[in-house]
Length: 410
Ligand code: NAP
Ligand code: G4F
Image 1 (cartoon, rainbow, N blue to C red):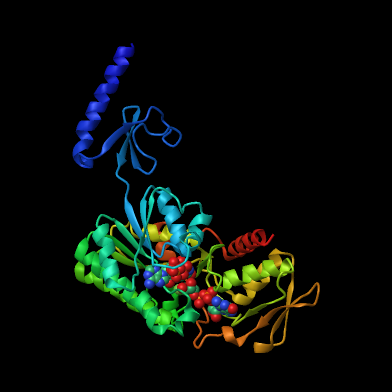
Image 2: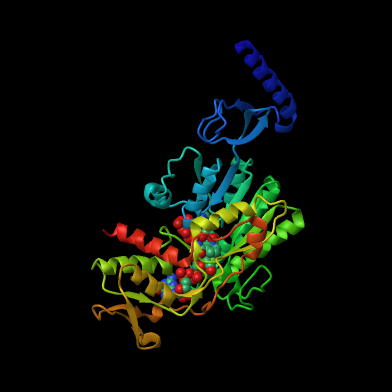
């Protein structure tokens, strides 16, 4: 009986090898799981980072281990870099994470990856690459010509700052994608390229809501530089038959958002005010409207965009818009404080109804030379074609960010 089982097993194994060997290539190892449940029983041969496919031959599940895919993320130390790295590592990728040289202690520089518990992950390889430098971009592909996917997240991403650093913003946000595209074209045209485009491109909006077909009208040096990167990506796709595409992402935030952005600034201030560490927060245009989503959701869309049969642009958004004023009210409400507004324009104040203390002031220094008044995205193409939909609402996001800050300042 035992011998018959062994014989049957051997036959199935040999049959499987003969049939799939030509498809998967000779360098792949084959693993047979003794259990029906692939997730519970670790494979006999595969390492933890190995992508697996399950093929059922008669009643025995056969798991084929494919070599892990390698992806490069530029700007890995940023908010999206950290969430995307975590997502790709969970999918079994090897991640080449690039960052520009810094004099800062690296353990501090990678604080976001640390928070996520992935800064020492065995499948992340850190490399320096300044995307504004063409030779730096060539060198990285010289070293890693075998990456399958490149996610270009590196940017000077703070809109207000771009009004005073126009040239360097153009170098990173405009020429950066060009440097990467040209290096890919010359080194390995099969590499798939994702460019981090932005809803800021819609600027003075020509349509409500904004979709992939809405004309651009940028309103900052940041957005004009991003527009150059956007069209270079489209141009390289159309000229050189490369898989290059842009995600037009609306604002997305998280507890690891940079502190200069309004969501994190408000969440942090609310927690500090509640704890009595700070008295008041100063803001700029609180009537600007944004379509705010969660970074952890949005990085999944980036990955999906590079798994399609044809490269295309996609708007990624929640489809709902709120004022900064609403965000402030909601954030204070999370810690039990109700805000009433008094005065107008620069003299407007947010008052804590329980104590009558001023907790919000307007400071014109936070106004921008040109403002984007309203953003609201139509992500129906992404839902239809990528199967992507925002999972975290703006309300949930604000609660998440305030809660994280409350824990920090305890
Ligand atoms: P982020 O937190 O500011 O991260 C950007 C990263 O780029 C940082 O790690 C930064 O490094 C790096 N970087 C800056 N200049 C560089 C250079 N010359 N070479 C290499 N790396 C450089 O931004 P994010 O929120 O994660 O956004 C990711 C991308 O999506 C950006 O391109 C942004 O413009 C775009 N985007 C963001 C949103 C959003 O709402 N978050 C929406 C649409 C599009 P340092 O820390 O050293 O400065
Ligand atoms: O949080 P913000 O600085 O983000 P902004 O300008 O919308 O840009 C972000 O989203 C873009 C996608 O649309 C990205 F491409 C870009 O990289 C970045 O991630 O400002 C949001 C709104 C603005 O209208 C601003 O004027 O909030 C208003 N605001 C009011 N008071 C403030 C403040 N913004 C900041 N940062 N600080 C304030 O005190």
